[in-house]
Length: 429
Image 1 (cartoon, rainbow, N blue to C red):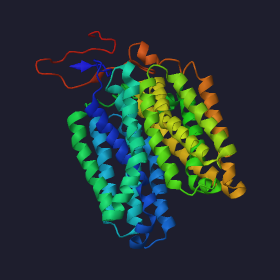
Image 2 (cartoon, helix red, strand yellow; image 1 turned 60 degrees about the horizontal axis):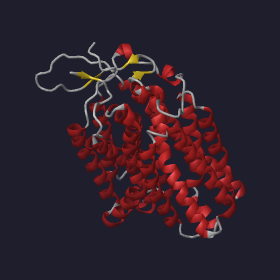
Image 3 (cartoon, one colour; image 1 turned 180 degrees about the horizontal axis):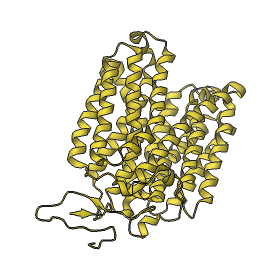
Image 4 (cartoon, rainbow, N blue to C red; image 1 turned 90 degrees about the vertical axis):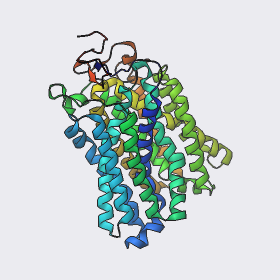
């Protein structure tokens, strides 16, 4: 039986979506765990702590470089085996780090994990979108991307604590085992979707040229750039404000992101444009408050909580807008472009923040972060027609690929139902 990728029925497929959310959790934890283990990892690998920090850079660089070519090369393959392959790439990379005593081998393992991470991020939102009806798409993506929030709020601190208790090698080995277990979960509970047939495989250049894609990518770049200016250097900014407990600030931010993604899940399918405009305006307001009043510690903590709430939901809103602009059939290709832009924003924000810190001190960080956030806000405000509509276009119309018309997706057929075809508009043709 052939069914539209818009799965019928009102209930979310929670088990499959949570499997994808755990994949996101594993990816973020794999990427960021070395940052909390610099003193522990440096002596066994015979390098300075700064070189351990480069393990995070190596992961991000491989994700940046690998997302587009790997996604393009594998677009024709069935989606679930590709997803499982990406998870096995994490397992192999983390296992290699766990046993390696060679810094070059450890870097190679991080490059492997980063490349498969870029492929995974290119798949997750589109996969979630194909698992639910169009009117539930935003909520499904929010569930999946909630794995990012949980990894930042709970996973990284817990992983660092685990490494302190049983050793950093055991922590990476645990991540490898988790990735293997996820493969089994995905095979049992995540539906199988086919790859793109050759005649429907749209070049990435044409995907990038779709109305709405470039504004969404621009907002991704601007927001991540501004966010990373502050987030990367929150410790020196806290010291500048006379608040020595950086861990408390990060805990407040991480906890608030959980509230932000929950609130976004409630609003994203009904008020996507207003919710995103509100989130970006709130981030901008927080930066002004941090620039003017961070030395009032109650105001500092409140501003960081609002920052976390606003930023926690923004990735879901932006990625849902990307899927809406591309159509689920081209979502993997579009998201591979976004993965590249996302990592570029992280790198550019960290670099820009470092330059501002060196040149003008920590007090300049909020004012450095504010202009790109305002650019993101202005881009959303100007993008009502194609990129950031009041309501998702796909929720009001039969599902189409913006480039190729109605989408037909294969799923397993129940016993006794053979060879029937249904197009996306529900007719048998």
